[in-house]
Length: 207
Length: 251
Image (cartoon, rainbow over all chains, first blue to last red; front, side):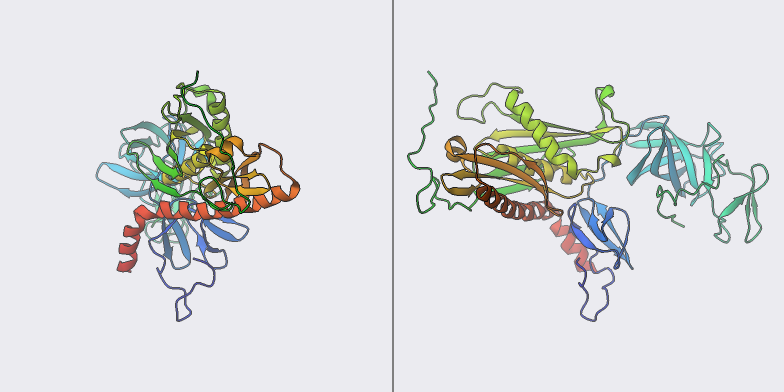
């Protein structure tokens, strides 16, 4: 997709390039046209694919989904940053986006992990950004937990009612400044309020 | 007494510029590239280039063994170039020799600038290049195959690395020397490039060239590499084109 490639009516075709196969280093456009998402890198104003994969376009966001997803081997004991995407009856599904300790690295593409719904994890809910410890890695399943040192736990949370970010209140409480609701049941990290978005460790939250 | 004696051709290139295999100075031997042919590897590629048959496989990123080689901030890239005992006219003693060790290093250094090693700290990316049949230019064919295998493995890359050799026979600068030209030619210059940025990642020369000949060789090499890069892209996309058509047809 080069700059200037447009539909006949002059508008950028919505989803026109959906599914186009791209190779690493292939130029996808320029920053004035698109916002780079996963699998896209920017260099001197140009956007290039990082992987062999399919190109996906949504409004002005483009991303490349790799056909093969090499997973950085995680080791038990490492501390990772992740987002809770969904919850089942007994587990949370966590998307690990970065390793924080002792290695610091982006996990691109994110690694899917499970977190059992047992204390101290029970209070978490989908869309929470959490610092977790890798418990076990085996048979393609990564298990994580928020139990352990005080830095583990929820680092950023949003109000499920109004969507506003929650502020840390007295003790282990989180308060919504917009609607006033108070949440008592989460394990809050000692680093609550740290903004991983600023450091590029996480890009967006699925809500 | 050796079982196989190589015979030097009387003329390597005629005054009209016709080479021993009938090619013109700027022509390449036929090339065929295929990816994803090994199930057990994370990425693989097979390159047939003239008489060369090169198989490349990539494993990783995976745990580093031995552990003391682990780099905490980036991935370790290892490349192993190996010639099969049956790849040459006379049996080659199996295992690494001086040439294989050197070529492994050269290939690793040609590929490394293309890989985002900082995305995979504490892990290793292993690249294995097996020469099943050799016919001059195995290192550049190996670089092409390894680059395809890396992309096929889903490794984050700055771009594909394509490589080609150029050389000199008499006053002619030639593209992609064959076995005779490699053996008895005047100069040989393998080169590899990261095509999108046009950065050279491998440049070796063996034999004298004037400045003009060197410039001409570089230009010829770049054109050949551009052609090979397009072939690499086509080879990588080929297995997925059916999917692409079906997805785009559904839009």
